[in-house]
Image 1 (tube, rainbow, N blue to C red):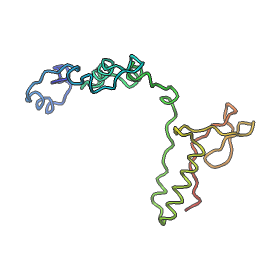
Image 2 (image 1 turned 60 degrees about the vertical axis):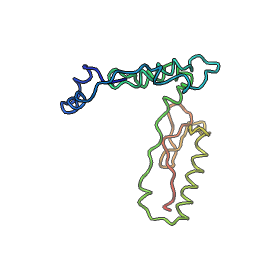
Image 3 (image 1 turned 30 degrees about the vertical axis):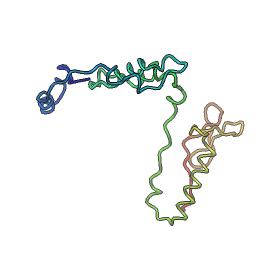
Image 4 (image 1 turned 45 degrees about the vertical axis):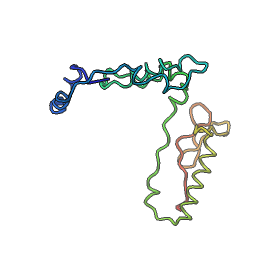
Length: 171
């Protein structure tokens, strides 16, 4: 890695550039020295999980200039990572937003325990062991529960949830 090159230094604010330029210059070390084979797991059956591929990915990630650094999408397609790539996980919808209003309410310890227990039970009913939201068995009309606990139809006639939050009945 070493001291950044002149092209990157020109992108820095004047005060930062001056500071870096006044520091001792260091040549970069080869990644084979920085990351020896011994720090990586032994390759099993997949050749993509070899130390050379790991070093290649690290060399593309550990770049100080963000314009030259590997993107997240490129990193996910790199052979060292791609063996674990799961499109459903990468493009999954974001998690539900936490309702912070519950934090401002006064509850006894027992009420907090009950709220947390109910939240866990609700989550276990609506998600699998990997945290993926389960689809619901709904009527053939394609009705799905809305956040107001009524039902609404979705365009596909299937049962997908619409970001429900646990209602705690004012506890």
